[in-house]
Length: 446
Image (cartoon, rainbow, N blue to C red; front, top):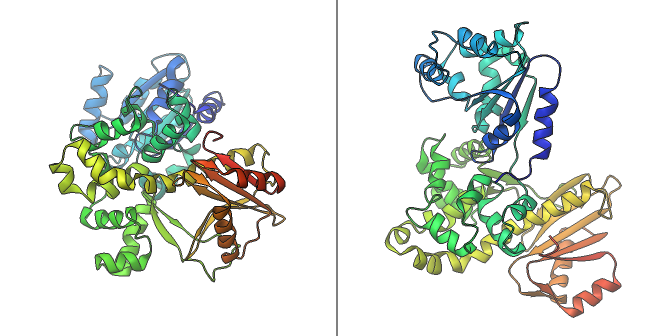
């Protein structure tokens, strides 16, 4: 089932209908939907698709030639053959193109020559699931040939509303639970059975040894990283709340310099993110920068399955869920609920539906509390948002806690949004009705 991606399809179509040969680099996490996007885009076009393998140049030519029912001794001949097969504008899609760049010195010169050939009319799209390769290694490796690239496009994870549209028979809360675990990776959504409950899917698709996503956490880190003992240690710590450099040093015994290098590698692959206190808030009572897992399924894997590996092997999947996952799942969902609330506010901001036109967004992580979302416009007017997944009902006590945290951060909110997975007390609703700067948002509104 294909949902969303209107912006991406429009970008591709604009380039395809443009004048002259084009070379696009499209990349993003494995499973984010790059191939599905290209298949949808190519449906009505003269398209040649090839999935590059991790093999030598000779083998690559043999494999590609076999798919075209031809034999080629070099890439120049191969591109000439593809481009001259019809009189229509050609779309050439090369998936996981880093396997060609890494293992062949002649691929990129041949591709460049093809783009400059006046007899060709094509758009070439290079796809990759290796974010680090595209953003760090690719351009230095090919040098001046990079000048032939028309555009880079990073395919983002899909949004919460796309998840809601995909799981049409789920409640908003159930969609939130799926999104919390799978993030915006449609390949993970498709692994779930939409006729089963979220709990049943976690048990059968993730925890069970024959589940489609059972080994996904391990696959993600082993795909490009070496020294898995170090990376697994750091990700396990981060997924269980040890998110400061000192915490990681104390727990692992690794030097701070070593930890910083490995965290940098994880951040380049967007498997870890670093969060700083909001710039315009006082740093007196704030924590220093902290680290968090950047991929939600990876966080789930290290928090519940890696940490409890022996039990995961020994216990029945249902028993493992009840004893190891269920007690901590609400805390897990809370952090990801904040991300969904941030998406909601971003959409409102883009459509001028907030009381301010925010130019900045961040969060404030304090020693006693957290302001989940801080937004500010160019005139300094601020909007603070607090998100709560854990409580069944939020009342005046929670509002007072929020205001105390804002005071700790030395932020005076012009507008205060409170997001709840549960409900709001009648007293808080009445107070908000009399104080227009407070906005209450329940999960169904999301």
